[in-house]
Image (cartoon, rainbow, N blue to C red; front, side):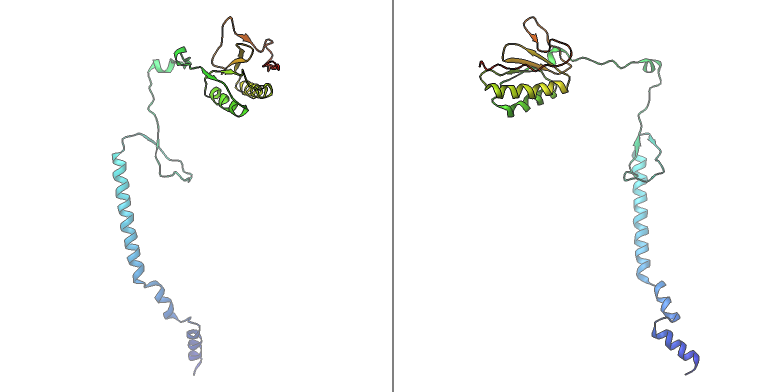
Length: 197
């Protein structure tokens, strides 16, 4: 064997011959896959064009950065350019008295004081009747509800010795018979209930 024979047998042993590389590029299966992918891409592009034609909204252009919502269109509102719209002011509308509902609540234990706070957070005033409840339990309820009133900057008024009305900041309480619990305007003072139940 000559040197060429030794080299070619060495290359064939390690599968480094020239004819091995040709097999990688002549795969008929790959051309079928490429054709299928091209057809799918063409169909997808046609569908996308049809969708674009159906849309009648004005769209703003996309940003160049990539994100998860890249394919979703952004819509803008059409602006009114008349003078009246440019000079209009936003004015808050107060709810009428007919929209306000007062809840009357007589908690049986401290666990029910959370319900009173939920009603207050919902924007409704609550009348709480603490008559007939253990003094320590009633004081805990008052402490809890007073904390809620303080956090929402609401109002607390005493109707009788053991009946109180609590309201959110947006609802005013007035009347001759109602006594303001916080006589000094420095904040809320929590009434201490006596043991005379």
